[in-house]
Amino acid sequence: MTINSVLTAFRLLELIAEVEKVGLTALSRTAELPKGSVQRYLLTLKEAGWITETPDPPVQWQLTSRGFSVCKNAGSPSDIRQIAMPHLNNLQLMTTETVHLAVPDSRDVVLIERLDTSHPLRAFLPIGDRNPMHASATGLAIMSRYSDDRIEDYISQGLVQVTEKTITDPDVLRAKIDKVRELGYSTNDRGLSDGICSTGAAIVDAEGKPIASVSVSGPSSRLSPDRLNEYGPKAAAAARAISSEVCRLGPI
Image (cartoon, rainbow, N blue to C red; front, side):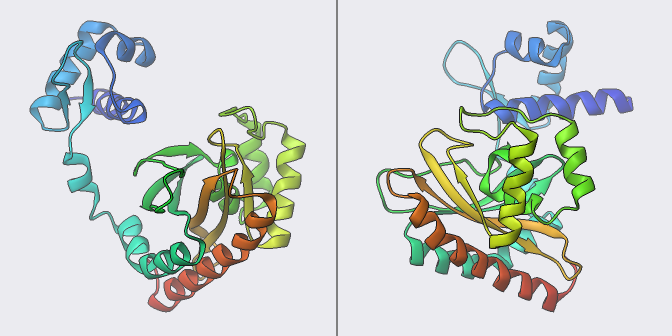
């Protein structure tokens, strides 16, 4: 197997993970590959235990639990999750809203932990969900710890629109990041999900590098601007406590 074929197989896995379930035709179109080639990759990935077909027609492909079993022992995400859990629990108890823990990955943030609220109306993102940094409270918090040059590089690659409220104007994003730096926490008004607001704060290592972020999320009917500014400092306090433990324990 060549390097290119390995990269293609991983790319197909990522595409399946993004949509959870997908048919051969749609996957072939998105990957810009012939259906016959994609079918061979899919059968190989199935034989390896990474994907499987849905039980009911029309046939679609979805990930198995193999990815979770392999990745659960990955160094940084699992370690930061273990350190963060007590603080996430406390934050969830204080706010009674959904609490998320995410880590940066290139231009995205990836959700690695979620503590659900008991409210019937709540925010929900699946574990492993990947979202653009500028569209989420966790991502904005991480970006606030980036240098201006890194932020300009991010902006130069385009600001994708996720909802009608997503920040897509570079000047607005720059002003938003400046505000996050001033306050110590981010707020996101329906920029990632319609009807969902959130506030977040960055977790940093001993060098001040953002390695994760924590957020409090809920429906806009409950998380008004005043409530976000009440929960923001709580998220920031949780992030500082986690950061302190990270620094005390050393590199992860």
